[in-house]
Length: 154
Picture 1 (tube, helix red, strand yellow):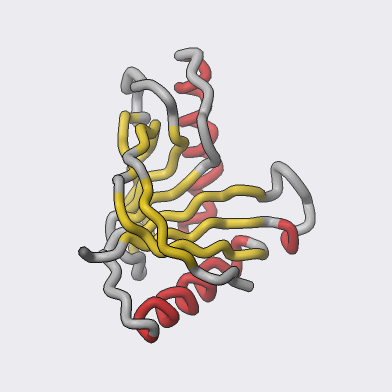
Picture 2 (cartoon, one colour):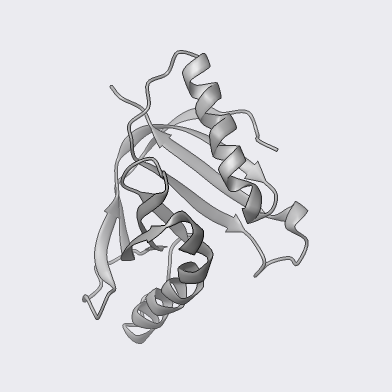
């Protein structure tokens, strides 16, 4: 289930991320360990995330996901291993919230992209999702929320 989309302007946000390029079928096998690795590095540097975990896709996913997973931070991190400093862009985005389990995200993105196009908007290839509530906050997937963001072309 998707909330009504809205257009907003985002500010550039510093991030701590790991860049991954994996087949679609492998996404669930790499996310957990990458998230834990980012958290370990930022915690070791006494940095606290200033927002939820996110994944930033450099292009619309196909059979291969080329993306960064990480957390927004309020100061630059010192790169360590696979964890690097990154940024979410300042952009005019169209945003909605998906309500449900992660297995429904592909269909939610498909529905959202159709809505964007059918309403006359032109979106960039990049996109990101923020996991605002998930299994760490409630075991019931019906209560999970994922924010979907598509930057618009200007």
